Image (cartoon, rainbow, N blue to C red; front, top):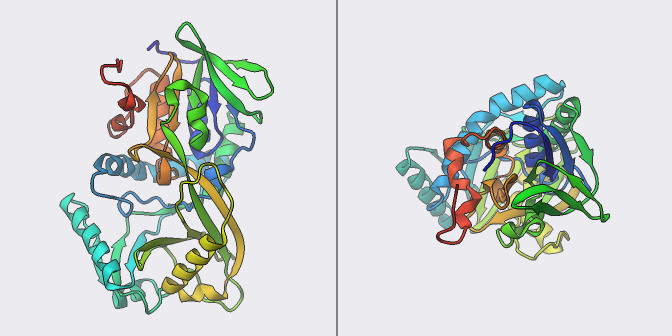
Length: 386
């Protein structure tokens, strides 16, 4: 790999990952153009905003947990710096998370999670239903027990996107609303991108951050990222209704996961409820069944939301990878980088991904926790990983 310290960088994708990487590159002196026909939309626009490495932890995904813990530790400074740069609040909400269960089977699942976390030296406080209701009065009587995880905060994804766009504008990042159809190369090195209008644009380096659409942009990415549909609801508190929870509530209701994330905006009481999971290709239709299931399960946990207004339904496509780790690093021809495949952890992994991309563009090593996300882990056996 030939190290490039600056030049023309094409970033494909203007979600939270692409915009944060573009910001870092522009600060380092690159001339950055971000390509996206609908900037700051897609999965980033409909994300729940949980910054939850601990409560998303799962046995066998220790590398993902390490990456998430690295990133959540970066979040306070990342949000502060972004807010200072732009005068726009980046939307981080420091209150933690409670994870609750209803029936005995749900509580057993949470006990297993607590035991797993304790084995990793990441203890979570086990609480009875009564203790949880003292901590979070919005919880209903069906909640029988759960965990308190104060280290898993949240972010208002739409405020974050606004701040990232403002930062890129201040740094003179160009946003081009044409769709990219391919990464172009010649002689083993990238030359730029091909556009849907039949033209092309030259670049010294290309960062593919196109989420679920990344696999179609170069043969080296074929089959590495797939769309995973998630439906979300946005609820708004009406006059006289109980306040929303003060922190993120994750729940297991008769074996089904559901979450509710408050949006902390003065004078408002918005709550994001999600999220279903389905692998139906690039289908983004909101289904009756998805809305029904989310409302039913959320109301079991937070009965006060029955008086809220249902103000938005939406579906997004999470970019899933083969092993749930993102793809962050060099791949394919010289000068091509990728930052995609973040799955359900896109918002969480913004700071560490941006830091890794900045290091790659300088020709330096990525943060230690990001090494496991090298996309060349999927290269054929015997292929070089230089």
